[in-house]
Length: 495
Image 1 (cartoon, rainbow, N blue to C red):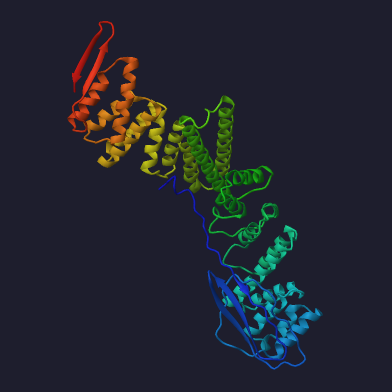
Image 2: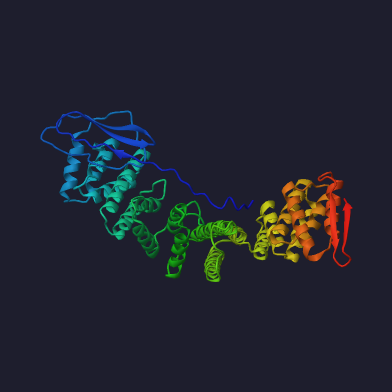
């Protein structure tokens, strides 16, 4: 069921983790990771017990963790672990050959410590990837090892970003991670975008997305239509209320020859809707200030600028919808028309909004009843008779409550457009059906009809409305004064 309020919410939880530094040389040590979730710190220990002589390995320095790795047991680190480290650091043979030779002498815990060792600053970090690749080939990667490696790689990526390395280096690392079979349970591309964004490197985030698209790096999402670097970055912009930036990002990438994911078009269309809504709210405030005399009325030049800005937004929205329909699957068609409907409602374009309602119905996506009523009110305020008749046809099979809501929206649309004669007829129709109009609606119709009497002199409709309201017990008896100027005659009638 389509809804203007339910356009899109992509809020995702975050997890911040860190690892406490420590060293060892010749004594029994317990190496503890600390994962921070909210305000809690959960210890994650990797036991290590061995009297070591003549060795000084600084195993842990600073590794960011993004996943929780737990263990309750402590294991002894044997001589095979240190021999493996020494052989790997000599770089005389391939890491896979060394590990294959020492396979029987290394426990799962020791292999994890090898990964941590080579993740330290100053070590050959690429060796950690090669070790992990061998573990995958030997089918020795359990959940804990996978989480540990993901944590190490997140720390490595963050360091590259903070040290202002080229975005190409970050992408190279992501490619290498994929090549060795490192598959975290989340999108590393989205995580990199978040890292750039959270430290204020927004231009670098845009450059990163461009490079990802240029290289054609595959994105693994829930399905072919959801997720992707462009849409995720546009969403990050949108939640900071930078709606036009999100729209420009997607359009500029597409027009530069790159190919953003289809999902990004929907995100950008949502940003168009939100920007149009903000514009409408700002215009209502300006009109209110002008009506109260706080500011001057908008001149022709300012009105023209506003109309051009709104027209540009519409042009962008239609362009995005065209791309989405052309490149997306048929199941996105209804969603695209839903976004277009929201655009036209925000801008008060009744006929275009009505067309989107029927287009949605044709593709099997039913809009909420309230949306039909909102479009009806817009069409009534613009006196679009054909659209009003088509939208009112739904009332024949509607419930009593639905009829009241629909006719109330119709009445308010006429009032907003200043069509008080039609509003009076709609009010009489409601009373004939046994529907009681709201007090504020009744008063607005009567006041509007009274003002019209001074211009037209036609009192028939006004008297009819008063009589119907009196019969329904909604107003008390009233006196109507009519002055016939030609005959200098006053006529008084009680209704």
